[in-house]
Structure formats: structure tokens, C-alpha cells
Length: 442
Image (cartoon, rainbow, N blue to C red; front, side, top):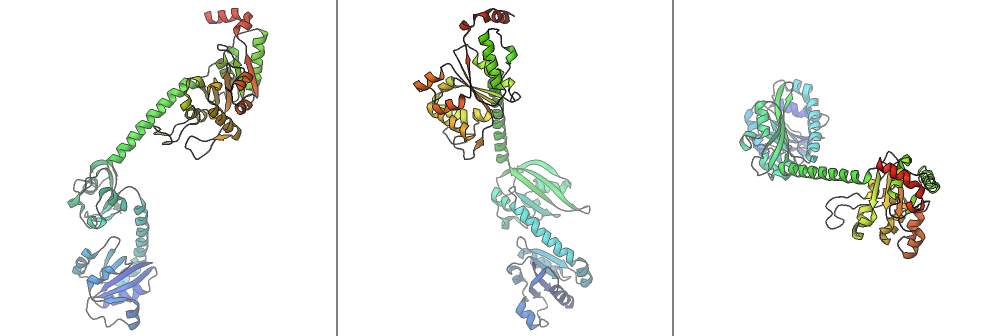
């Protein structure tokens, strides 16, 4: 319901007052009779409305949104303008043919005012500064973000002329040029805020009714650009790391050998690769554990996804947890951005832990728990991340010996021993030597 005050001075104004009392969507709360003799007002109306002959008192009525002046006297409008506050609108209706005008446009006036109220609510919630002027450049509205960015109070900006306070800004230029002004870098008139502005004229039925500008602080834009550049650098670095650790080119058909023990190893690995079970590759240095890991991945249902290799022996114990599980921004000293761990990078693919027994007992235990739970948390994280990957691990130590010496966590071993593949050294399959020699010579 719109609350309005009516300013009248003759019989036409009285007619308007009677009609507006019955208008749906409009509540009359005040009346100013400029004739100085409101004797025509009934006692009931005196009880219901604020009645005065002083024009200066009406603008302060609580909740007032519109002052309707029914008069041909332009001095009335000029006297009221200095009293207007933000969101208080002045409507002047000539008293000639008032009834016809009211009947034809009263409903549209109310609907437009309601729509304007909704629009102001939306603009007040926008985080970017917004400023609106009429066709003469008089500032009609600024949103709270404008004051926050510029430091200029609404009362010091509204009803000022844009050509006086910011003659070289995008808003003034848009009015002058009668076209949009985009990416205009300047200062907000009356402040030290450097901004990039986008302004556009408001055109109704081919006629310019005003203009609107939206702007952002240059510092905010520069910060966003810095963050974007930093993110791009991180992404490029991440891709480089993935390329280094995720290449997978070996297949079972590439493996060279014909000895029974070799063919047996390949068959066990091939069978294991067809399922989703974890695989534990055990063998001395140089037995091809990494090659077999690639072949298993490339023969598995996950072959189209990345194979992430982690050389556990090369990771200092202090950062093993971060490398595997990742870390949220600020969770640890020096971590200025969220870091993805190798487990997360291997999602939907295969994670290969080379030298898994080199991981600390704590990290092995945490890895086992994550595998059993089917989810894990980044360091400092609160949201669980589901695990969806194939796990392959390798070690040069016999598992039973590693368990006895404390190099292998019991729970992690229970996760890894679904399929164990023992790789024999070359000195135990000498008949493969000629084939290997010929292969490498070629």
C-alpha cells in the first residue's frame, strides 16, 4: 500500500481528494490546503488524516512515499523540491480535467510506483555501486554500495546534478552522447575512488528519460586479475606435474620375455587388472614394478583415466600427508591456497604408490582408514571426499619381513594384499636375456 499526501488549493483539488480516498492501492495520510481554510474537511476526515496549511510539514510524515500536487501553480512544486528525501516522489497533476486524467492514469501510476519500489529493493541489494540520473542529470538514486565504495552519503549525492559533481564521468558522458559508455576508467566525482564504469541511457518510447551507471573499484579488478593470473600459473604448474607423474605408455604386449616364470607373472597381473582389486607388486630394484603398474592400469576398466605415480621414498616424511591427502588454504603455515593431494588427482583413475613401505606408519594408517571408509579429508577440510580409484602399491621388501620390522602397517597390508604379484629378478630367468638384449638394441 502506497502512502501519499495531497496538496490542494481549490475545488478541483477537493474533488481529487474525495476520489483518491477511494482509490485501491493508495492510502492518503496527509492533506495540505493551500487556501488556508480547510473548513470543507469533515470531522471524520480530520480524525483520519493529518490536515495542515503549512507546506513544509507534510514531507516529514512517517512512511510517506508520494506527494501529489493538484495545482497549476509551479511555485508549489519548487517549494517542495528542497524538502524531498530519497524514495519520496513528487507527482504534479494539473487541475484542468483532473478527473479524466486520474481515471485514465491513476491505476498506471500506482502500478508503476509499486514496480519502482521492487526495483529499488533489488538495486539496494546489488553489491556493485549503482547511480541513476534523470534526463537533466539530476541524481535520483544511489544504492548502499555507492556510499560504501565512494564514502559519499546518500544525502550528499541525491538531488545533485551529475554535470556539476562528475562532469567527466561515464554517467554524464552517456547522457551527452546518448549511447552506452563501457569500460570507462575514472574517479567517482567527490571521492578518491578510482573505478571502471559502464553507463547506459534510459530510453522510453524513443525518448531519453535518464541514465544509469554501474561501476567497480579498479583495485578490486586488479586483485581479480592477479588472482586469475595466479590461478592460471597454478593450473599450468599442475598440468606439468600431472604430465610428469601420469604418463602411462606400457601394456602387457610390450613386456618382453618367454620364460615360464615371466609368463606366470604376466598372467597373474593380467587377471588382477581385469577387476578393481588392489594390487601389491613385490620385487627387487629393477624388476619392472613401474612397468607392470602401467600395464595393469592400461588393461583395466580405468585405462582412459590418469595413472598418478607417487615415489614415496622421495617425499620427506614431514610432507607425506600433504602430498597424499592435500591441504585446505591456511590450514598449515605457508599454504596460501587449497592444494590437491595425489589421491584426489587420481580420482576415477589409478594411484600407484611406488615404495609404499617408505611412508611413515602414521600416513600408512591414515591411508588404510581412508581406503576402508571410502572417503578422506584434506588437511583442515570439513567436507569428506569420496574415493573412486584403483590402488596399486609396490615394495622391494617381502611383506612379511616388512611387517615384522615395522616398515609396513598391518591395516594397510590388509588393504593391499587382495592380489600380490611377485616379480622375479632377471638372474632367475636367464632365458629371457637374449630377447631383452635384442629388444633394447632395436
